[in-house]
Amino acid sequence: MDPKRIQVGNRSINVFDHGSGEVLLLVHGFPLDHRMWRNQFQLSKHFRVIAPDLPGFGESESDATEMSMAGMADDLASILEALQITEPVTYCGLSMGGYIGWEFWNRHRHRISRFVACDTRAGNDTEQVARARKIAAQSVGKTGSQTVADAMIDKLFHQSTHPTQSQSAQEVHRVISGTEPRSIAAGQLAMSVRADATPMLQDFNIPTLLVVGEFDSITTPQEMREMATTIPGATFVEIKQAGHMPPLENAAEFNSQLMSFMTRQAIGS
Ligand code: MLT
Image 1 (cartoon, helix red, strand yellow):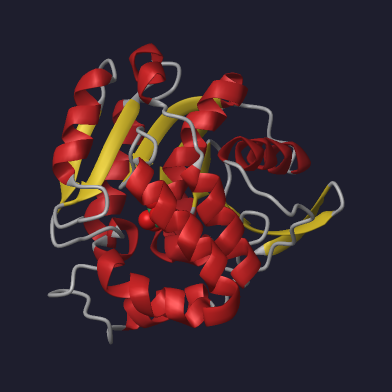
Image 2 (cartoon, rainbow, N blue to C red):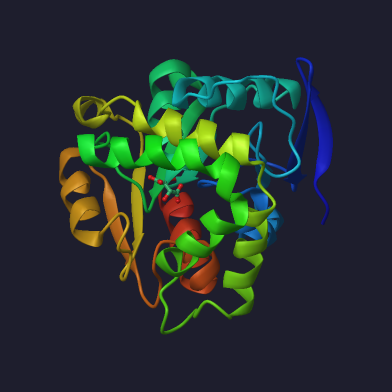
């Protein structure tokens, strides 16, 4: 099942688009692309699964020198429009895909029917984290993307089940190494100034699922459990044997939780 290319404004965008019926929009983390969802593509037996490469990542072109969470949320709305999708979708974003999701809710609320936040947070960066991102953004042009991949890989995966040499970890390492340094820099700068989405959580009035790997050290189960208590009616699920990348590390449990949420929270029921 290959992705296809669509034209969005003056950019050529790479997007996985298979299946029919209700739309499940999968939004990747940083600095990854649609391939992090490869174990979810089989859900296209039940839904229309859309997984784009965000502009500047994977094989998608970008015409912007700067990125922002709001800009990427608008890009997603434009991608849905280009695919002639007008009905509300289930938005499922991991980590940076979650940060973009808060802005998507803020700016394109009528386009979402359900929300799935994976291994992410609503709060913005502490000063220390924001400073570290700015330093990382300045250095990636010199050190290259592979250095970023080397530094990130063992934080993304739970090392006892997916050590650095495992196939999934190696694939993700290749994706990060292949990402343009200027996109890595722009993504870091965009995340460093993102807004605090915490105040809007209490207004979430759509079915919401929060998912986190039990060993995630980037966005911890404790943090996500607390976030779940502030979203009315949210379901919180911890995925066993997974770190920051449950869709790849424990796809069977991740898919079963996602399916059960979408079935339980049938739209129109
Ligand atoms: C991600 O997986 O998207 C990143 O860990 C997000 C971040 O750097 O905050």
